Every structure is written in structure tokens, then in C-alpha cells.
Length: 96
Image (cartoon, rainbow, N blue to C red; front, side, top):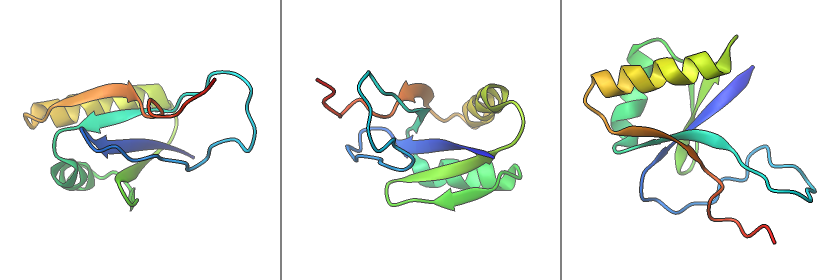
């Protein structure tokens, strides 16, 4: 089962969950950035998603087609008038 990471916009926190022990090339971890993490958590729980809380993010269980579920989550949150975007969550890591 895959997990989709959802993080609050504007919070600079390094997520190291499931990073490889060693990597030589560019590395990215795609997830969602939202304007209100607590509200996103409540909306996703109410919609039936299984959520695991993290220190600065939540992890949403995805079964089956993960990319389709990401799009469904974006639509669900946008329908609740939330700002949400798909983003690379590893943008604060130097990879030189």
C-alpha cells in the first residue's frame, strides 16, 4: 500500500520517511501542499481515507491507482474551498 504525504504550505520541515539510504541522482518525493493541514485531515477522514499523523504532515493510505487517488484528493479538497497543489516535498534538500 502506498502513502500520499500531505503537508502544510509554508512549513519548512524535512520529511525523511522512506528515503533511500544512498542515492546518486536527483531524488524527489511528490505529495500535496495544503493551506490548512488540520482541515485537510478532517476532510479526508470524513471522506473515508485512512490517515497516519506525522510530525509536520499526514500520510494518507492509497490503494490501487495512486495517481488517480491524488487527483481525487485534490478535487475533494478544492471542493471544500481549500488551496491544494501537487508538489515535490524534497525541495529543501541539497543534492549536489
